[in-house]
Image 1 (cartoon, rainbow, N blue to C red):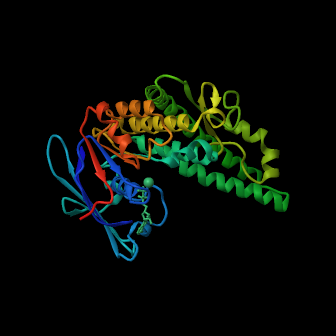
Image 2: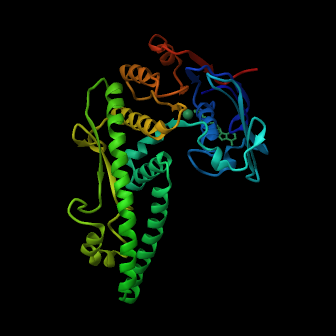
Image 3: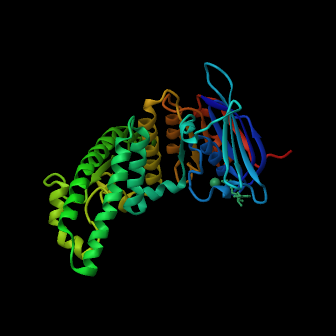
Length: 368
Ligand SMILES: Nc1ncnc2c1ncn2[C@@H]1O[C@H](COP(=O)(O)OP(=O)(O)O)[C@@H](O)[C@H]1O
Ligand SMILES: [Mg+2]
């Protein structure tokens, strides 16, 4: 599956833009601020139905315009021609049409055009607080699952933790808490924790070999990486119920629950060290690319179509060897059409020799 035509109207800084991507690698080249990332964002918009970076949807509409339109002609190797059109108005009315037919449920449309967006912001996964990593894990698991058991457990768990925390907060005010109430939450939370922790560990177990393989390819086998689930208590030797008990005095003093699924973390390691401490920016970047590609591999292994890769400013801080290795990797059968943004045309031209798929360069701004 690939996009053979993309038209943007009033999408961010693009008043009217028409491009005709090739089936292989499409490099979008131009100076800072010309709208390279915006093109990738528009493609991912068709994939997930919203802005991947979040924020108010109407910010995607060009200043002073009243609507935006993203149009794509999707071609499959087997059969040609599926037209996708997304319209968004200032009053937040969103319409998606497939071959002219309005999609009543946008949620059902989502996922038809799978894509992976790799951006400089991915570094937050390493450097930010644990909630960023949990969010990554939770969403990756939810998307890849065939049932919504995980998501349901997560929603229930989150609600019950809120209630438990409220009870603990109450204790700080009144020096009293309803013990039976606390026990009830313990029971609910323990049950759901079992589902959540098991799935998370299982998911990382599947993800890790791919991430390791991809990292090895990108780095040329230089460093060993590892991804470890770090529970917030001694999971090997106690249950969450026991941990709640052990931590009760602490939790009462804090006014919130200090152990559980909402406190567990993931640690990324390189040659045995925490990646935050040791890894260079280039190494971190290579790892994050490997991680995201691995996630795509796992998430999309159920689906028959290969995901479109959206690689935003990916080469920055990578040495030329790694760039070459990466290009070899993304051309493999696991991935589909590729869009790359870069300010440096020379870097793209240097890839021509290592390209086995078509390479097309799109210069921005497009004049005329
Ligand atoms: N709603 C909008 N209307 C008009 N221009 C916008 C809007 N949102 C963002 N832009 C412009 O888009 C440009 C940034 O585009 P971007 O794709 O990030 O550039 P690049 O990736 O090429 O550096 C900025 O000049 C910004 O002002
Ligand atoms: Mg950019």
